[in-house]
Length: 130
Length: 83
Image 1 (cartoon, rainbow over the protein chains, first blue to last red):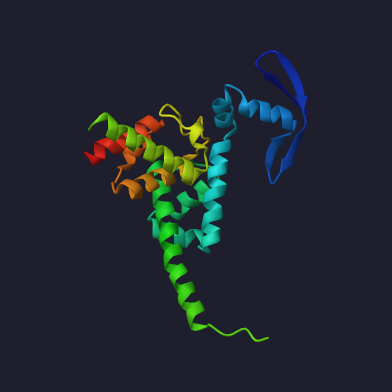
Image 2 (image 1 turned 90 degrees about the vertical axis):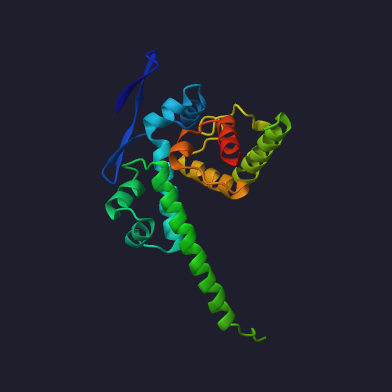
């Protein structure tokens, strides 16, 4: 159990769990929602690194959807693979320029492979027998 | 640039935010903040800027794009780049 003082008013006990080497604190959903919707929501989200993690997850998802490896995407985007790895783990917050490079690289790759898919489909067009 | 044009420009930006980021138009004003009011993360912001560039046929430098925090900032940046 861990005691956290919220707004220095009341101390509440929270259960801790460890998953994949990271400690998490269990917060009731309504408390969590109240925190993220409060006037200080930006401070709370920053403190919790939620936006960084969300960004990391979204970038990872896009790379995987495109079927790119970290190495390939790093090369296409012109960034170091170590940097991309840290971004996807939410360990570093990429700047505007880096995100733009990644988005452009993924979009361009999707456009190219999209064309290939169209061509492949076209070549392989077969009537579906009944 | 005339007031009319700035208003038209603002409307186009609001329209773009509403369409691409699924935010009801009535919730968007010039003072709206991308992060605080729309819940944008930096990926949303990059995509917004890319949409702006496509829509207005301009190139927004990264340093400039990074400074944009409100809808008004975006409108002003577009205005400066399309003069």
